[in-house]
Length: 137
Image (cartoon, rainbow, N blue to C red; front, side, top):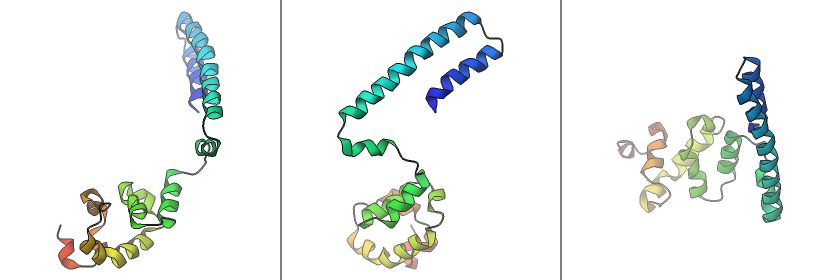
């Protein structure tokens, strides 16, 4: 997308009566930079381990990725990473998250796992915490 923005921006500047010298310079720069960036990216993709190439091409949104990470998380630390992202990414899995917190809170209080730091604790909605004395943070 950003590669298409440069020519579009130059065209807009040109249509608004921008300085022709600057427009010509911008076009020369664009036609030099765009191929250089594309060639560099192609070289990069050809040089990396092939199993990682797919990680550069994904239509999944951040919200979808975080939901999937939570739902497929193999341990509490992976699932708990959901508390480091915006609450907008919780939409659709809040009930599952609430149940998970309620089922595991007592154990987390006893074990005090490293992944459950103060930042993540503070992100957990107070009403999800089953023990009243734990709600007073």
